[in-house]
Amino acid sequence: MSTVSLVTGANRGLGREVCRQLGELGHAVILTGRSLNAARSAAEEMASAGLDVEPLALDVADPDSVAEAARAVKERYGRLDVLINNAAITYDTWQRASSADLDVVMEAAQTNLYGPWRAVLAFLPLLRVSSHPRIVNVSSEAASLTNMGGGIPAYTASKAALNALTRMLAAELRCDRILVNAVCPGWVATDMGGPGGRPVAEGAESIVWAALLPDNGPTGGFFRDGRPLPW
Image (cartoon, rainbow, N blue to C red; front, side):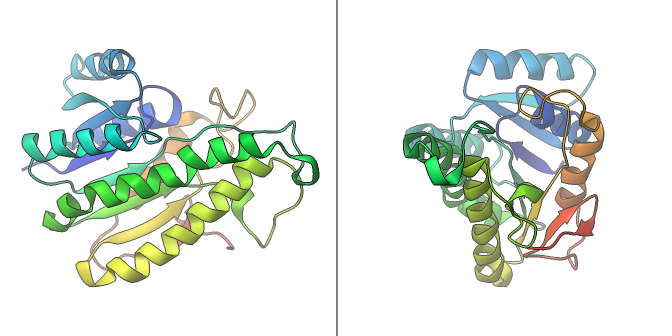
């Protein structure tokens, strides 16, 4: 049976490309978005190319939406092999930590930190059923404490916290054989990243690499293009 992979925030940009690449590898892909219509449009385009991609409404900032998505995946597949936490918001280049609007910071955390956390909690029972479970948290080198500077506080702080969550989950889920890693796709030319970045396909390949790790692969790591990044 095909590997079942779910990608959050996948109706456009990086998440959409991750779905396409996984679909080309033969995965049964669940393409999710806050808008079912947007997810359906993206999924239908890939399905018309012969890929096994299905749409699903999922707003990671809404606990009820996450719970309903988990129920739908359980009914349809009975398990989940790969969870890719890609959904993210608020690249707040206009802010500084010393003068930040904390409402903006808290809103970002709802999607960038608590969203992946909710998704893991909801889908963990289905991941435990899998023979080769993987969790991939899409992070950013901006979250590296080693290289961190000022600015972009909502995005940076929420992604640094996501890295911490990655480490904790990897340690706690090692006994369940669930590999949990954070991946920086690099500066990618998406709506959030803006023009001038690397091609979306290259950033997506970095994420797909973590989804395809062998059973003896790393867990609790922070990577870009398959190479470790400093925490």
